[in-house]
Length: 166
Length: 438
Image (cartoon, rainbow over all chains, first blue to last red):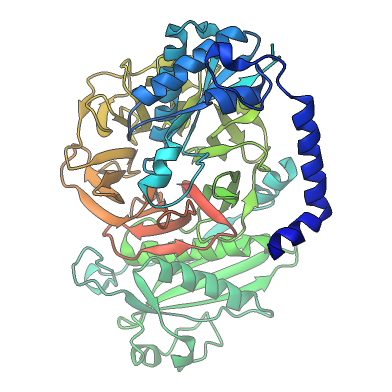
């Protein structure tokens, strides 16, 4: 409690809180995202935040595998619907590997994951030429520790939106 | 950057002259046999070189450190010395050195020449035979004194082991700073002992896997510059940089051919496969060497340039394969437990070093070029990416402690003895050894 008061009194926190509150008002959804079956969120439909929060921008892989798992298929199917609805975004799929491999193999494995992800999205109707791929290998882990709990988060493909939004 | 790079290599003029080079009967030859199982490093006395300033002590210190780090020599503490060398041209009192068990003795002198250059002289003595084994002198710019020390250490190493030295060499590597999740990586270059670190890139772009040209002051490396990861060449003397080829996808894992005229690398393709390509740097033509749907990468030429070793997961897990330099007749050569990657052909041609993953450990090992005779030299949570010293006796690699993503550079002898850490200013990975400097 005491700690919260101290933080709340700091000018940085107050400024951040205010800016979030203002942004929240300005970006209040006008149309519900419910008709896409994506669930309601605070993000503006069609925004990158909408994509990240309501669709999910990443999928995960098994060890040394680029097979799109069942849970990943669900996420990518939702991604494909969303990306077709908002066709003006440029798309880059980033492939990543965990740290339990050698650097060069992991770069190639990241590419293989990115390619598998792009192929899945293309099969679900997103034009393949709209999707670029990029591998970071094991260069950009999201979690670093010496166990599977971290490695499983790092074996991922992220669909990154760029260019003009819809 | 240009200036920095140029400074490293300019202004070094070396004149080598043999002062005395008599031949000795083979029976009296002082020679180290480091192939024996019960190997003991040779006790050697390295006296402070005579000089009017601190330079003599500094040069002796670098020589002693080089020889000590090789694991083959045990420099004797200077406090034990009995004779104080006052005239390095005269024969020492051998009994004074035998009594402290110095098998070999090094004496020398550094003097400033009228033209501003340094003159460094040394003599190597066999104390038990009472003979001079080697005597040379060098002239150099004063700021190249460390190089002279390394060259003298190489001469001593060569005379006493019968093998070429490797101390007058450099290492390119990736300097790492920033957070564990988002490392800032810069290309660095340093002397093999970790001295004289300079940076070749600023850290804006992610850079990986630098490799030295075997024939020129040139490196090849991978950079994420401009968002499209590609292979580049960097001339160390001029700072001039250029792209290697213009491929449709990412290119990774570059390495020079032994004549320095080609770069072999892998192209990451649309379908998720990785295939090996070679590019001729003069004609700019590229040749595709593998055509599988697998990951083929980590290619490395044999020293005669006729063969290529590489890693591939075409059989499931990554294993080491060998093929002709034209891509002909690929055959698997690694058959042990686990997976194998980063194969690098020894400069002597007789061995292939690799990274092996097995049982949750990463190891550095060597095998014969047909895949037989595998020996693991060092193992740990994460040991990766061996590079050979130019004499083929020492390997450098990087090691990460568990869960840290915090690499440092290590060396290990071909026998698996003498594991050492190389001190670097920051975290460091992806080392690549230069050839012996010209």
